[in-house]
Image (cartoon, rainbow, N blue to C red; front, side):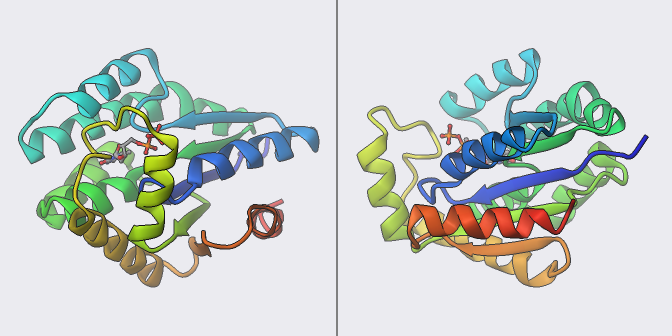
Length: 204
Ligand code: TYD
């Protein structure tokens, strides 16, 4: 059986990646594909409990990283690897790049330590494609404030934090041109849908 495809969605809070994630999932299902739609942190019952803690409880930045990777380990074992082995497509709202961008870029955690956690947690699992939705921080914050009544622990961070996260994502895109595509999230929704569909069609 052919292994499925693994596509991850990334970007700063408010860039609009979750809307695009939902759109791609329905687009692929309409084409008749079996798709697993999932997210991080979360994606499993245990992962969702860890997510609730991560989004609400203050904690040391390395505790935060360890919990992100603990949730990810469970997600990879219970959901992602089995689905890919069954030939299904896994469309994941955030994955390991978010740890490098948020805990590394945003909070300043050692990239070396994050890399060790990534090797330990993922083995040789790498997304086939990562879409990074990029928008200026001011634009993303405006969208976020319009859409979110009760911001979580990350969404309450200052603009400077999101600037660092954004720069980290831009560096990830530059360093991984084969895997990562950067998408201008300021464009019209329909134009972004088309761009996403066209990029994803190259994986078929
Ligand atoms: P997010 O996808 O933004 O959830 P929602 O759109 O429902 O608000 O994810 C929640 C937060 O988790 C987000 O602010 C980024 C953060 N995060 C990390 O800091 N590191 C990680 O490794 C992951 C997966 C997420």
